[in-house]
Image (cartoon, rainbow, N blue to C red):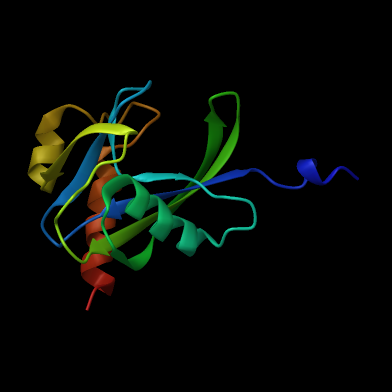
Length: 142
């Protein structure tokens, strides 16, 4: 059996949250959207290690993983993608963007609600995703 048919592409997302505000990044390429940091795993990479790597590469931040927020599976740019979405706590607030992004913002839940960037009807991130990440953070973070 062809081993390339045994798994899906896997990505990790890190809702970087300090207990009050989320870090959002503006992509430099299409789709030009605001989103939490994240990306695809490397071959045989542990998801938690991949998350730490992706957040560090995209933001320069070191993080502590608080907990799993959600998983989703759907069509993404011509293939199926499984994503593991975590809420994470930053160990500092000094952001150094990679070339993949052109801007960043720290936003509280109200800012996210009124931004208009996250529609509950869109296939991307939703306000309810950030609300869920905040609830899990406050339940698990000590």
